[in-house]
Amino acid sequence: MNLLIGLISFAFVTSITPGPNNLMLMASGVNFGFRRSVWHILGINLGFVSLVLAAGFGLAALLLALPAAKTALKLAAAAYMLWLAWKIAHAAAPAEAHASGGQPMTLMQAAAFQWVNPKAWAMALGAVSAYAKGGDLASIALVALVFCLVNLPSISTWVLAGEAMRRLLTNPNRLAAFNWTMAGLLVLSLWPVLQF
Image (cartoon, rainbow, N blue to C red; front, side, top):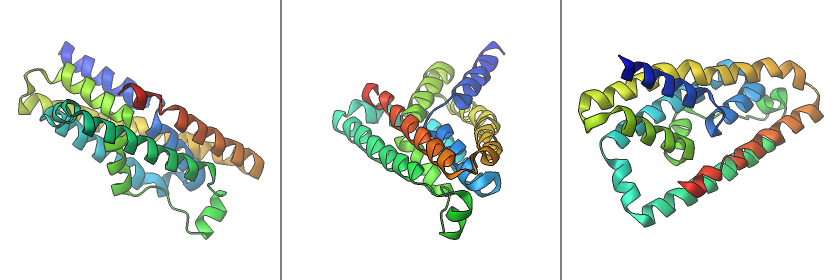
């Protein structure tokens, strides 16, 4: 029981704290609102659960054992996060974004992002190594299930916070400052890539 409580606590703390996903979700809440960001939320959850399962079944160990693969993952993560930061920094006001066809991340884009997200890798590796002792199917599935259940409401709060901020960001200058700040924070979150 103590192990389960520890796992739930670990899942909550790592899911609710700032990182690339949560920064992008807040920006999505500001720019697109909660309803339009639902697929982004579900994609993060689905992608992260698949990453936990893959890490539990040995993919992470295999990837980390190959230096070239580790370097390729770092480069892909950095490039993709810089591109996302650029998109956030240049996001239009909500009405303009809707009129110009601006879209939040899709389910598949958000799911795929987990595989190059350094915080997601750290979370998955940490959870599997600490809570899936023995690497059996049941313990790996439990870690994935707990993260699925805890992560979804945790990351949703970031979209709701962003949506609540929409009223404050009706001024184009404040919105631009917010988007540039979120983009800057996303770039700063690249720091773990250098240590992964």
